[in-house]
Length: 229
Image (cartoon, rainbow, N blue to C red; front, side, top):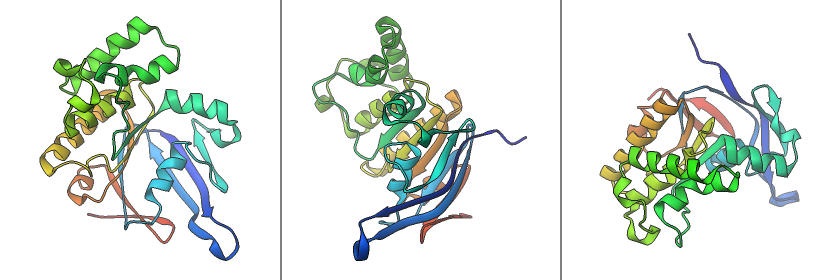
């Protein structure tokens, strides 16, 4: 039995610039995401893969189109509501970890929970558990500069799922790592997907990793196509 659709993008259009300088990234793009599935998005550089993730993650708004979560068009909401929704329901892992260097691995992990006003004792306990899951129980008090690239990305993953989001968006999460470390980070993303039932969308140029996901889509000429790897 196929899982329920929990995110649905309809007729997304995004255009940058004006007049003769207009660049149409995509027009009338549709995407349905099922609960708990892993979806790879591939495509040449500059085709709009990251732009699509930013729209799915409500970091940007489309020129036209809708994004439904549990049958609600969330782009009808104001920016303040979207910020709270994003913090609670969407996790992000980028190619560059975007951790705060002045804080420890644990403090970075729990930051979304602190921002949301969660109970400090509970959120730190959950942070410890997550860092143990990603193999960093011995590095909780180390600052970002004391961690390797792979360790930093594992902290970023723990931070992304501390709020138990419905959707995990990963933009080239292994692209800045050596192949062996990248494989380990991907394995962790797949494990977290399974453990927490996350819907996961990952932009990648790594077709070996894309083949291991439930679906692979290619973004080309402003449209998504099934890629049978």
